[in-house]
Length: 258
Length: 192
Image (cartoon, each protein chain N blue to C red):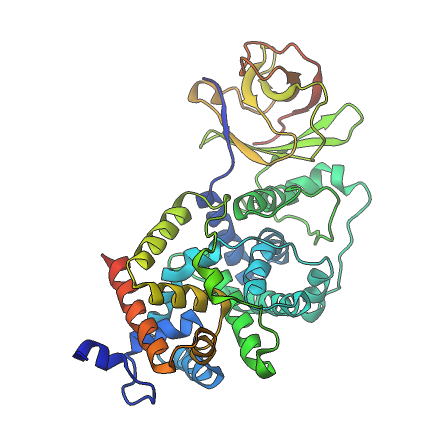
């Protein structure tokens, strides 16, 4: 037996592993309850050891991030709120789902939740189909990262079809649909920006079931301004983006704020 | 061509999760709500990988978010990535729960052989993280087969050295030695 393996043969613990290996064992999850508690105590009291643990957590994190998501039962969130001493549910106002104010505050989170569901691999519908219990608070003004102004694209009956969040600087439009079944006609949705008094310019395909971002070419970005209208029509998949709309307008909304 | 569409990529998502965590650290309940909606599925997936029972896993999940509310102020966007930070808390809590249970009754049933053919990549995993995962998997491939199997099994099942030894029918000392050697080789490979 060579010296290298000697060093790690420690059935009875004569040769304790190095701190780095110990940290790796802790992160790997092989330590029994006692050894695990000791390692956790060291993480709290020994910054050097804590850094070793962090490095191992980082090394193994790709395996954690690949696991399939499983949607928690609806009662978990109210329980968390209760445990924090909050009301279990802060109920949504009637009509909230179609309220621009709600979406202004909620768009970033709804979009990101939808997107997270896609990115993390949650099965099933990716956008909220019914209002889950939400915490509704007035969005503080000027809090950019929480809420970028949104444009609601309403259907003829007044219901919300899509929420658009425009990032002019980066040339991106995030589109979050309130999911609907695919069109039986086989037609798909196409997004248009219509600058005031001008012809519609296609921004290409937009999904009716998944949140996604649309990259806007530099030449078209200036069209995305306050006063312009976003509209969605039903069009043939072929030839998209089209030069001009031919199908019926499914939903539209004016850009009031960017 | 005018307008091409793409699902928001992982980087944007990671950025958003980091932003929420920072806001949660400042006591922002709305950000907490958003964070829960965006990440609870992934974290329950992590808990249920270790704990067999959904009820137990959801209790741990509850505990995880209560912890996140309390600890988010310690989250440092410059040093850590949001999802790594969150999933690590979830995994640690799930393993703590496993260790606290008598005779590991809560453990997800886990077959060591099965791990070998674990269909690792989930189709939704994207860009940056996928690259890192490929690297981790590639480095694992460089270990001797026993080390590979043991490290994967250990990580995904949360079993102790003793449990791994008894399940694999190998002496405890050998199991420790394979895993420790494997860890060092893994680190060396990842740091290359």
